[in-house]
Image (tube, rainbow, N blue to C red; front, side, top):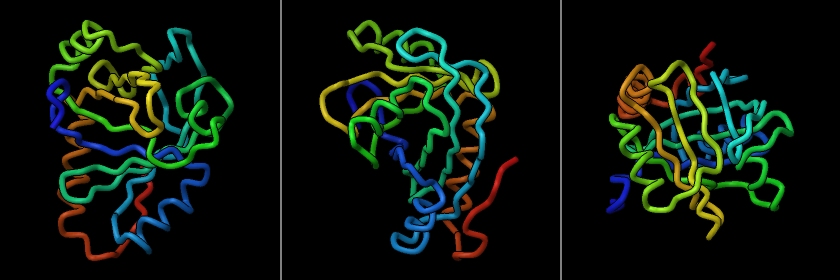
Length: 175
């Protein structure tokens, strides 16, 4: 539990090969099923305040109440993901906190001196997210995500399905 952001709801891993990463999580760790979204469409995306044409694939699964996110950036546009990979890292890049009152949490973080590294929106205003650049230790960027709309319902679905997953249909592609 963070005294600032609440419970950690997601661990986000930046990977070079998302299919290999899903396979590892399924076969070695036993986590799934994975909801795979190729060529995620952002409404807008900014890196350090400037528009960026970053593209990515993502995969989501749960282990209990903790969501695991795999992110594979698919171009060389500026982002914290690219910075992480360029620094020679691969693996845990961020911890995420979810909010039904995104703007209040965003404003609180800014008021405490956090700097936005990158931010964007997927699927409308209730799909906002921001990564605060902690710059302290790899794997500890802080993400906040608005779950007040359809994204929150989707995340809840993933958690419920994972609770009873029997190992079948381990990768479920979302169009």
